[in-house]
Image 1 (spheres, rainbow, N blue to C red):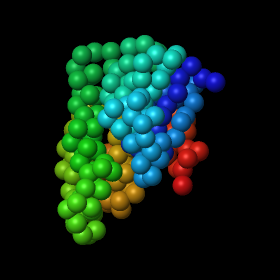
Image 2: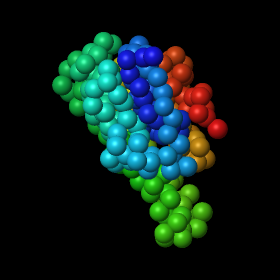
Image 3: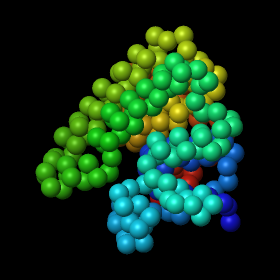
Length: 216
């Protein structure tokens, strides 16, 4: 057994982020699968680990559960600093975090499962309107990220230079979601290019949702 266990779901964007980070840092981990669509996140056992009833939850060395993917990624950076997934300079770290948060704060929360379930369930939103909702928030977020990437000399093979950072860790799962919902990624060529570079990296490829043991 590994010293760390990740509770996740193959299509959870936040779980996908943490899988990528663990892989990039070369950290072994076991997985416990929590099926979001079956409501396994609401069981008393899982709620005891994560009162938010969300994914992921990381447990390392039998310590207290770690929740919220941004906090987990920062924890991994502090406790397992090599290889670094944030630039060494303050301006670079700010840029990387800004790109990451454009996804993590402004796109993903509006399109996650519980929001879509509320639209379809309580609000009785037609499916074509749900699709428009999803595409709208992806478009607005990706237009900004595309501009940030395309206009900056800091953009390289990855979002920031020649090495993967938190920006790529956030962006790759969001592109996966965009493709799932038939969003036209050709609108954002720089995002498509850097994400394609990321997916050539073994750490990203092994974290890919459809390659997880719980993939349906």
